[in-house]
Structures are given as C-alpha cells and as structure tokens.
Image: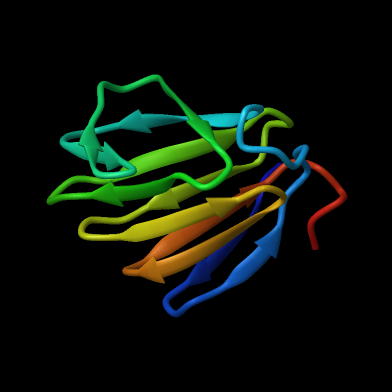
Length: 102
C-alpha cells in the first residue's frame, strides 16, 4: 500500500536513485501539456538529474526507477537533482513504495 504525503510548499526529498546527469532517474507521464527543462515533451519521456518538470493546466506523474512517484498538480514545477527532488511551485503528492524514503 502506498504511503501518501501531500506537500504544498518547497520540499527536498531524498530519492533512491543514482547521481549523475547522464543517468536516467525516471520518467514523466503526463495528462496534458508538460515541459522538461523548458521543452514540451510527450508522456513517457525519460528524466535526468538536473531536469525541471513543469505542468500546465493538467497534472503529471514523475516515476523513479525504484517505483516511488511524485504527482505534480496543475501549474507545478519540480527540479530533479541527482538523489533529490525540490518542489519549486504548486501542489505535489508523493507515493512512496520503498522503505528508503520516510
């Protein structure tokens, strides 16, 4: 069962991924327009360390390689930095499957 945590302000969360911008840390599934590092991308796009995910009027889900996920609400921004994410704007919900994040 997922433990769900709703976040409304800037948050830094350690993620179970490897550091390095050349290493994919996950992917983004969109339910409308989504941008990764300023570029409009289709659902299923791979996300790398250093990328910023931005949603428009719809939401998106960033899923990490280990199965943890972050749902970004409308008009949200999140930066992926190696083993951490930082919610820069908007509402987000964290779905934690691993025991590494508490």
